[in-house]
Amino acid sequence: MGQLNAAIVQVTPFQQNCTILFDEETKAGVVVDPGGEVGRIEDALAQTGVLLKEIWLTHGHIDHAGGAMDLKEAHGVDLIGPHEADREMLLNLETQARMFGVMDAVRDVTPDRFLTEGEAVSFGGHVFEVLHCPGHSPGHVVFVNRAARFAHVGDVLFRGSVGRTDLPGGDHAALIASIRDKLLPLGDDFGFLCGHGPGGRIGEERLTNPFIQ
Image (cartoon, rainbow, N blue to C red; front, side, top):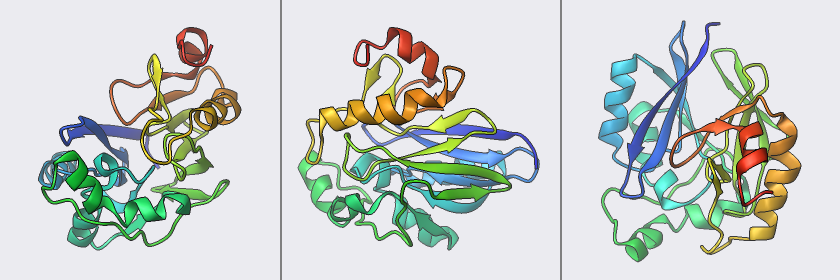
């Protein structure tokens, strides 16, 4: 097993961070949140030499899941997550697309399996604990690699901000509770990548993020 590495491909008009997590030595990896522009994701997989093992979803919003079925079918891999509380959202992605006026290549999603709190997912020897962190959406999950002191937090937490809660299924109190009870206890040295914008460290957000002071 080599070092855990990541490559980010910004996709969709929402500038979503589709993330390729992979083992530097074996090149085994996963794609987290292929929201669209699957051709660009494919190019990134080819450039990095990553051997795609699974697709992971943090939640069911269009900019995170819209390209998932096309990528799944192209590679014949399992599509994992999020929590089943986002099931209806995933089954209505095409409706979401019409609402936002971004119909290109968006398809409804049926995961191979949903995830629950405390489960683990892995690739190439890198194990990620699953945390159910509702608030931005009811079924949002976060992927935590304790060995690398790293988490992929999707749209729960951003550098200097938090996920929006004005979309259907959003709950601001639940979002702040997810951050307070599940992300902050990970430790100040934990690094994170998120669904939009630059990543950061938990400790910096604890001290400076105005939404969680």
